[in-house]
Amino acid sequence: MTGSRVVALGHYQPARVLTNDDLAAMVDTSDEWITSRVGIRTRHVGGPDEPVDEMAAYAGAKALAAAGLEPAEVDLVLVATSTAIDRSPSMSARVAARLGMGSPAVMDINVVCSGFTHALATADHAIRAGAAERVLVIGADKMADIADWTDRSTCVLLGDGAGAAVVVAEPDGAAGPGIGPVLWGSVPEMGNAVRIEGTPPRFAQEGQSVYRWATTQLPPIARKVCEKAGVAPEDLGAVVLHQANLRIIEPVARKIGAVNAVIARDVVDSGNTSAASIPMALSKLVERGEVHSGAPVLLFGFGGNLSYAGQVIRCP
Image (cartoon, rainbow, N blue to C red; front, side):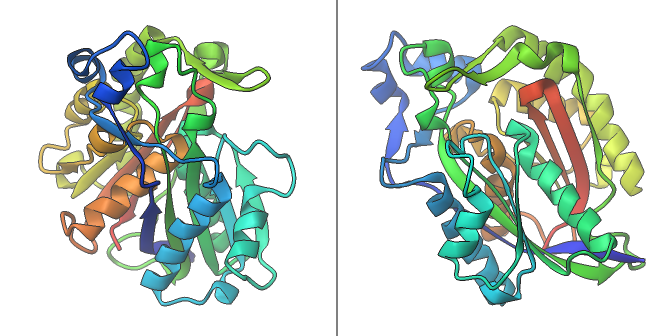
């Protein structure tokens, strides 16, 4: 059975950094109020000349270079995003054009904060079905464009960025699949708990409902992800959850039982970057050498639609 594995990663963030003190000059908040409630200290914010597809293309180019692949060798591009304002061309088509690709299949996937893990599973499924051999998977969002900068409960959370992974076909080996089976789902009746609605679109959420759901319902699901992959939580090398809020990440990671794992906490420096958060956090861990090649890593996305998706991968 042909499986797949992640062979390289890349990420991109805008140069402008917005601190908590900067936000305190805009809305009624403070550094202490923000850090005590969500653990975020800074976030990167793109300007009008940094569209989503440009950020995605930068991250994708970095991942391709790390993989030693030319853009023309990619046969499928998947971009997870919820901040694509135009309906067509898609972000994936625009990324393919920016990178000078040949004739890849292109597809956008909008599952908001769990978009990247949904897209990674889709890449794995396409490879297993024989529909692709080399896939560029990107999570990219420009949350600053949809933030309500007058709402202190939400604007303090959001940041911009992109993260990318190169996924290639590989026979499933004795060490287990490079990308393990996905466990995904949603809670449709609670879908309105996280929203991007209106004209112009604006981000809003029911923070307490999301917090209770994430900290109580997600840990047993994440443990089932490990079970499907045949990996015990205590054997994980790293846990990369959606970087929503440090006060969600830390208790969920603890309840999973990943006592020996490196826990990604990129939210402190980057804020909530939606679909970009998992690949960007993982790319930074690998770049800093905090997770060794081949280590099992739990990726688990959750958020908008109250959707979730997770898989265990082998670190590139």
